[in-house]
Length: 192
Ligand code: SF4
Ligand code: SF4
Image 1: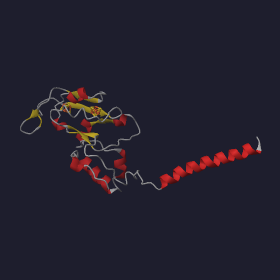
Image 2: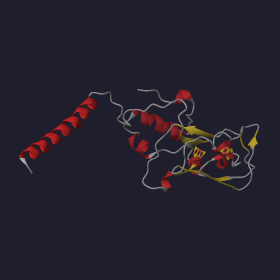
Image 3: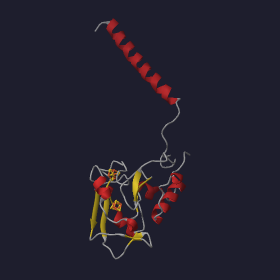
């Protein structure tokens, strides 16, 4: 290698580092777009579609939601047909039993096509977006089992771990635990 080539090499390297640094420095002074989640609360569009909220006491196990699902990720088992008692607005206890209502979130597209044909409007798109877990089995949500604990939607791992020290997470945790539905636009958290 000649002396000329040697110094040309050094020049090229310094030039490419300078170009890279220029881009890095430019981003240093731009507005931050990431948030320290979950310490900072995320905002959602009013029609955001998150993990479902399911009202088992109004589900007649008609399978319409499962048939509408484009990826077949809703699993329903029942002993016999169910119908709504007009007086109470809930499922008639003399009818069949809904043995299983589960959704596999490793497949779900959050398209909301399952909510549209539901004759009793008992399946809703919720606002929780994160169901991270350590196994694939954990992302299959057994809604009939949740109902036994009075819940309409699962409590994600991150929520359980942060509820005792982040106020807004505690609020959400208590809402989910108490079985309160939060699917109206007014319940969607605003930008903070
Ligand atoms: S949101 Fe879409 S993909 Fe998910 S369960 Fe409903 S229909 Fe299926
Ligand atoms: S469409 Fe509604 S009532 Fe029918 S099985 Fe699905 S959730 Fe239940």
